[in-house]
Structure formats: structure tokens, C-alpha cells
Length: 327
Image (cartoon, rainbow, N blue to C red):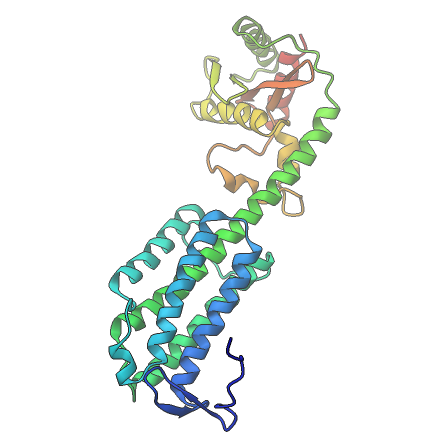
């Protein structure tokens, strides 16, 4: 097996594909060296993420970067013998990567500060290295032929790597949110005795009747909703005079209380700017309600569904809901 060292570069020169000798400070060497640097940083990201789509995409890109590097490292004679050059298909692949990632993360609305985890940070570094490679290639194209499709590929590559960095960050954020929710739910459920009977339409109708009774006492027409453990609406009772908007809010409170296994006012407190679940309302816009009036339906120590009341003040909604459940 040949030695790694050849001693042919000891005087600051290296060979291009095709046999030409150039100085190691040559712009062409700088270009393919920068691509190699980007490839290595992508490898660091690959080894630190468990996201299968990101891993598969990085692996595919790394293979194509070897082809890109070979092209940039070739003289005219070397180019003639290359196969598997970067093509329009490769550009389309990267555009698809951007679109796929954006389906999960949404479009960018603000600048991102790198550092969420090792994988996303490595992807951000790789992105900046790819940008540097693009700048060097633009400079190289002023004195050396560089194919247009190759330039487009490198331009799209930085976008794709950035999109993957955001996807990795989103994945980490969701996992952290799940861990926080799990911890808070355990604490909340520890305080429930589970005194309610097994959930049934008959029981829920009695609850709705009690909610109606209390709302009349308070002089506030409300909507009472109940969902099962899957978040499916089981019952919706609207009192005469209740605001139309209270229908959606009431159902949303029941959905939220069941989904997060805690009263909506407690979830709202945890979701405040200084709370451990800050930003959780963005997980399902329009469905998660972060103010009082929703309670999980707990029976036998298990959450079997949720109820929600809307129509009065937050305090009134909570009072009515508690009264309805005190059977």
C-alpha cells in the first residue's frame, strides 16, 4: 500500500486531475479545498443527528461533493475524462430538499442564532463554508472556465444546508418541548385523585346541565364542550345568548386540556415568556387555548378526555367548569 506522503508537494505545488502542476495557493486549489472543508463539516453534522431525512440527505450530498471537487481540481485534459458531473438533476434535488424542510419549519421570518445543538451548529458552519466556496468559484470563473450548472448547484447547496439546519433545530425544539410537557403533566396529574366516573355521554350531559345551572346563577350564557381522549368532540351545549365565538373557544379548551393533560390556565402559565413551555401555542395555531376554562377529565388516575367552558370571564369560565365537574 502506498504511503500517504508522496513528498511531491514539499515545495508548495500540487497536481491537478490531468497532470498540471500548480501552486497550492492557486485559486483553483482554494476552491476544491473549500469544498472538501464543507464536506468534512457535513460529516460532523451527519454523525451528530439522528434525524433520518437529514442523515440521508447529507450522505447523498457528500457523494456529489466529491464529484464537484474533482471537477474543480481538473485541468482541461482532466475534465475530458470525468464522469458523473454535477447536473440539473442535482440542482433540482437540492431545491426539493429546501421545499421538504420548509414544509416542517415554515418560511423564515427572523434571523437564526446558531448553537441549538452540535448537529445544527455544524450545518450552519457547513453553510458558511459553502458560501465561501461559492465566492471563490465566482472569482475563479473570471480567469478559468466554471460551468454555470456547477455555480447554481453550489448556490442551492448553501440554501439546502441552511434548511436542514433549521429542520434539525425544529426537531430538537420539539423534543425539548415534549420532555418539558411530560414533566409538567406528571406533576399536574399527581395532584388529581381521579374521582370522576368513567366518561360517558350520560355523565357529560349531566355536567352540561350543571354548567348551565351555574352559568344562570352567574348571569353568563356559555358554551360547554367535551372531547374524548383522542380529542374528538363528544358533546357541545350552547346556551341561548352565548357568543358564536365561544363555540370554537370552548371546544379548543377541551381539546387543549386533554391534549396536554392539564388545565388550560396551568398550561397558559407555563407557556408565558418566562415559562418552561414558552412558544407551545405555535405547535398547533388555532387549536391550543392558553387561558382558563379547560380541564382534563380524570378518572381512575387516567385522563379520559377534556371539558371546556367559554362565554364569561376567565374566572367565570373556570368556576363554571369546576362546578360542572364537582358531581
